[in-house]
Length: 303
Image 1 (cartoon, rainbow, N blue to C red):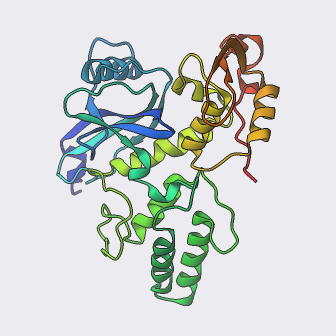
Image 2 (image 1 turned 180 degrees about the vertical axis):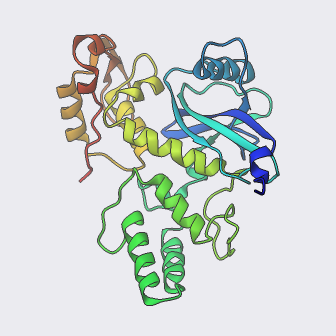
């Protein structure tokens, strides 16, 4: 019986990190030369993969991670462009932006996903919609054309469908299939959508963004990105930056009050165009006062 060559191919395992901060109302990620996510080998001497990742990130970038969770394991054959299979165990980490180590830099994540920022009209929205329709119309049969149009409409909120901010990975994978991002082997060059990343790092980043957008709706992880004291406006702007859309201010503040996740510090901070705003802090003890599953930072729809 013939032996499967892939069973004996060289294999390496690495940890890869989607490290997120929010600075000046923009979600930012730590990159290597702007085109790769930080990645490194598992460090021996640590009791777990998470502990190894924390140690590796702190050693290589001088950043201490707050919240951290495992995302997904990527192990597709050929994903790194060579004969060696690389298994990448990815993690999402939250921190506050600080000076990056040599070779590393902070980049806005909408540089890679410009279509995901709906706080204003997304860049290249019309050109992207036209390119998607051209891809759909190029289907080989009426059934394929109809299926492509339906997928594009639902995923990108076209033809009366609402925009679902959580479908980040679905949108990237559809653009990849349609040959509209540079990483795709079918890239047609008709339009350039965002900055390409090395290997499948943009797909990994999309996975991290999707996870975080979903997570902020039922876990108060956004406070890992906030300073110890903040205004409610700054908190809302941080959530808007992550979600990529505007929120209704009165609804947001009412839901924040109902959730009882913050408390006043007694201080205030001047805000542009108005009187000094009250400063708040996260009530970490709230996680001990009630079931963790009942604490959330609500994302209210804008009007």
